[in-house]
Image 1 (tube, rainbow, N blue to C red):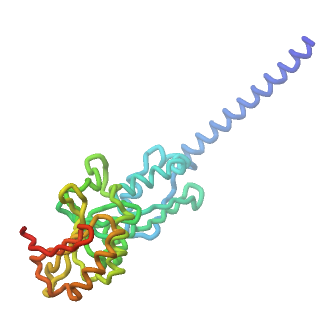
Image 2: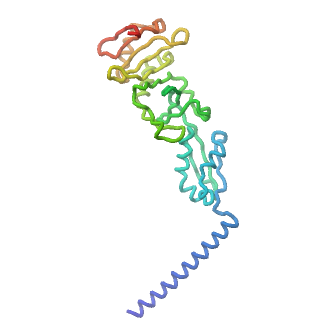
Image 3: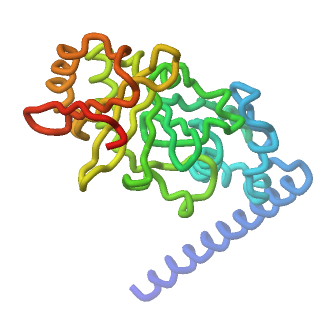
Length: 273
């Protein structure tokens, strides 16, 4: 048994030695080929469509080690896409198109609505990402639907929608109540007010969140003001009652506030009070 053991051990040693010799030779040949022919280099990134992201942005985000060994770039593609998406309002999709070649699909974000907050105008996507409407790349985003909706004005009395100091880049992840805002817009459409409302002001009064609707006036300026509860589920009853009392809101002075935040009653008062 002892002789048999040593015989097997010697054969194993020979095989291991041969394996390491082959691996060393293969590694040396690969290193030599890489040094001479750059077989592992990142050869190209095809941008589709072109014109949204510059070559400088696409290649400037690639690390030197990833440029030398494209496999490292492939393994880090998700992090690469996130880094660019933090600065530009786009979704990115990366796929391998050949040996060391990639295709980068650039999909501009679609704005769900517009928002005025912190003295600046923002676009907000359906998933809650927000970016300045003045951003150069905003010209490539799809904003037709958002531009057709009333502007949301977010009061400083409300919870801050995004912590700008805690993030780097130009595209921020907001904490906005997206479903509630969506229902606000749906209620306006159901009441026939969507095209007549200029601003939806999300504010705070007497310990409660409230929403003020500012309608267009006859001259395109600010017109009638209606105060509603924050809960969109309470809008329909109040809205229908207001429409019955005031069929034509354009005739109401902008100095008058219709307050429908109370249960079982609607108050009409001067705004300065």
